[in-house]
Image (cartoon, rainbow, N blue to C red; front, top):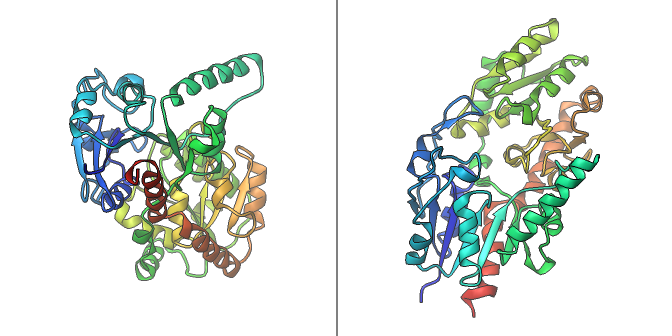
Amino acid sequence: MKQKIAIVTTHPIQYYAPLFKLLAKQIDVRVFYTWGEASVDKFDPGFGKKVEWDIPLLEGYEYQFLENTSKKPGSHGYSGVINPTIISTIENYAPSAIIVIGWCYNSHLNVLRYFKGKVPVYFRGDSTLLDNETQGLINQLKTVIRKVVLSWVYGHVDKVFYVGSASKDYFSWAGMKEKQLVFAPHSIDNTRFEEDKTVEASAFRSSLNIPESAIVILYAGKLESKKNPLLLLSAFMNVVLENVYLIMLGNGELEYDLKKAADKGEVNKQVLFVDFQNQSLMSTWYQVSDIFCLPSQGPGETWGLAINEAMVCGNAIIASDKVGCATDLIKQNENGWVFASGNTNELKMILQNLPDKTKINVMGQKSKELIKDWAIKKTVEKMMDEFNDDFIND
């Protein structure tokens, strides 16, 4: 009998599509998209617009959009994904194993419960404990209830493909045993970002009147509270930095507030706003910059894959300690700096004491070295090793 993997996830995502494509070269794969076909043409509230990615998300692997009967379909919560035929559809596919990505949807939880004990059930998620509040009786009670619920949920999972150190801590806390925890690094399509865009990056700098000698700090992503771009802007505008520029790239709910805050004093000439840029242009923007900053405060900044992208492109990194990848990918003073989330003074201190451009570029090369092992190829290798041990070679 041919070995097959069923993957259950909500909708096509630019980070997962390359993983599915490469995995499909190793074993038969079919991805079941539970949000439904409408997810391809969805409105993204974070960017405040419909986003159509300009890289292929549905090529190189089998997929199937499932009917979603939710009254309010989407990935916003449990009731956003209801697929009456999901169990029978997966059974008809007759998979050798199932990977479920995310459990907090009606259909995903049903899949975990139904198939446990029938075929190997793997789980992929990047949750952490970074947002856990332990102060006060109410927060302690919430933590206890959360742990009980998660222990029950993950009781329906055979093994977890965890993405990094903070992710492993979370699954261990939720009751998963060491033998159930399999490291499969959170990764991007490194090869797409490795392409040299020096000429294009130089042209972008020139169009923004940024000298080649300048240090450029880049924030790229949704302009939303979770990522706390206002903290970065505030810190930047309250230190004296010569020949240093800040690019705020993206759109979102905080765009007006950010532009209003930046429109003060001489330093505003060093703050530049760029609208949302699609995937094919992002490697150029990372190569425009020397430092990438993700100042998130959460809740829910589980990993921060933009940091992977920036590191592949040779950026030094500044991130808050609420960013899930900080422990694994940022080596203090080697390829970047980590500061306490919400602490403007710490971030100001980092900015005020930035080394010269040559040293920053050396740190960026260190980023390139560190990120080599956080590639989709490595993720697929880890998954296939586990499949070979668990059911392919049985």
